[in-house]
Image 1 (cartoon, rainbow, N blue to C red):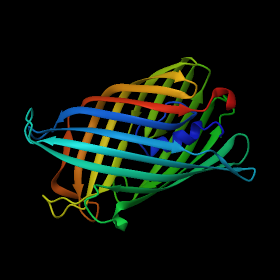
Image 2 (image 1 turned 45 degrees about the vertical axis):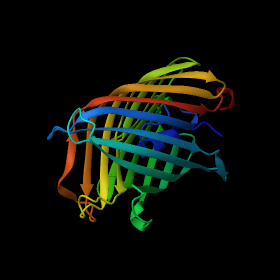
Image 3 (image 1 turned 120 degrees about the horizontal axis):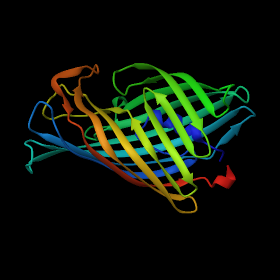
Image 4 (image 1 turned 90 degrees about the horizontal axis):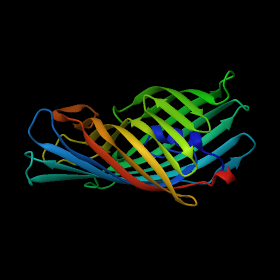
Length: 297
């Protein structure tokens, strides 16, 4: 498997917080957001998630084309308390499974194109499977290396998804910079992360990420509800430590700056009085990952 820094970079945009390092190919994480109070009521909500992903070895399709398959799964549980500091709770469980195929086409040593089509299954598993459980997405970014600084890569692209409205078309601006002691990458408006590399066994840095998704849902309290839309923007400090060989432990802590939870009808329109915003709250994550050995890049 080749060095896959920008494979991870493109994957990050369409997922929640993932690899902090360019050569990570497997990850398993548990995340928890502390209870946050709704802005217009005395109730509160907390959520936790378990997520994993795997990036397969690179397939060379001729001289200029390289392909990676990416498989990911996330299970999220939302806990709602009807009144703050009470034990009267309502739970909402959501499943997110995704198959992505990353295509890279090399025009030359300085220019290349990433295309990432995805098949996404998102549901609360309360209904029989249908086409409404699946959400298509595709991302394309053209990168080129700066003539003035070979460490700097700049990209321009476009994304199509159903992660917020029914048909999102989003222009993308990407940056990647790597030195021996520092790594920075960003896809705007999706995410940005800065990682410091003091030695081969330790890393630390900061990351901010836009995590939004739409799920097929069946609400017994509101028959108009066809989908749920979630939004979370965490700002986190992270630290990673090599345990042994290719195995790393990763920890993150910070604050979930913006959270939103809303119900949509069959046309992806917000249902009146069913869109709620929450106050910021602490956010934590712990996980294990596997990376390519540096001497095999």
